[in-house]
Length: 397
Image 1 (tube, rainbow, N blue to C red):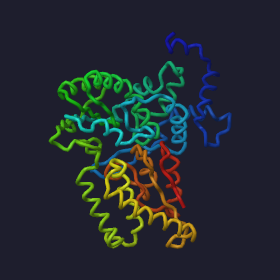
Image 2: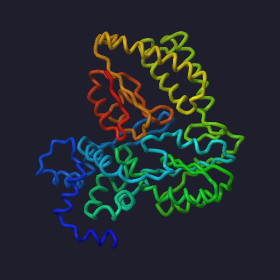
Image 3: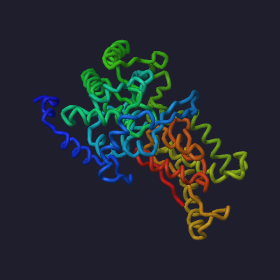
Image 4: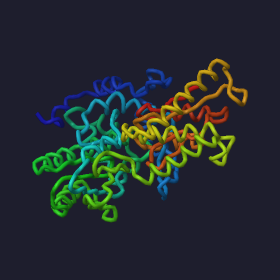
């Protein structure tokens, strides 16, 4: 029996009970009698629960976000953890999945004769309300009334917003049919395929024009278009870079990135904070460089130079931390609190929008903590931590 026909026997009371099982208001002090009215009110006035934020990208340009308020963000986080994460994401999707990173997206393409990189234009803006309704909340799992409400919680102005904690996972669910279809088509032709958000990568021995035609035709069914300006065909004579990682022979951060970082690390190691031009921010600079070395080693753990420097600096950092813990004070006389973004950032921008005084995007468009948490920024930093959809932000005293 079709899902739509089955659900016609579902009563209003049963819909209410089902909604309660999702625990969408967990963490909010809402009386039982106001539980369902609250959900219906928010879903019917969704646009009033967002505010726009514009964030500059390290790589240039600006990223426009629509950030939900505390109530809607709580609903979305609970929806993400209690409902959306129960659905399977395609094996070809490497972004917005716990335990995966840009390295996982790059590794399948190591040593390929040819690498083809394609980009979906205006990815999130092209994911419409109806695509979310059909793919994130299928009729086989939800009655129409619940499908509609949950879709409203994820969309605004009939589109999927960048800035909502649900958007990354929803985008993967929307793209699952495309990923499965393209993945099987490529497998039959011994072509390797991965997708990182809107970046599509194909590698092997094949005719690029054939793959481009196939991708364009299937994307058009969804209403997507390719960004022709970002199409790249890379042979072995080129630096085959996939999501910022060179894969010609082995996974490796670009030579230019490593050269620049090696110089920065050497100067700081030899001359200390004075080399950064900001002696007062020496500890912050040291942590920044440690984070960059950790990134290089996550891509290529066998890099001897960075491996040795990282171990040397890490031992010193651990020693200083133990001393500070014993003293219980920071150099400025107060309890020190540091923010850290762990591996697994999905670049949603929520923390950067919530607390730009502490978080920003790095060269790879991943969120990093670039400043200590002060009394003035503590509340916003905690809100950023609690609002992270993949729980990769830590605050430590």
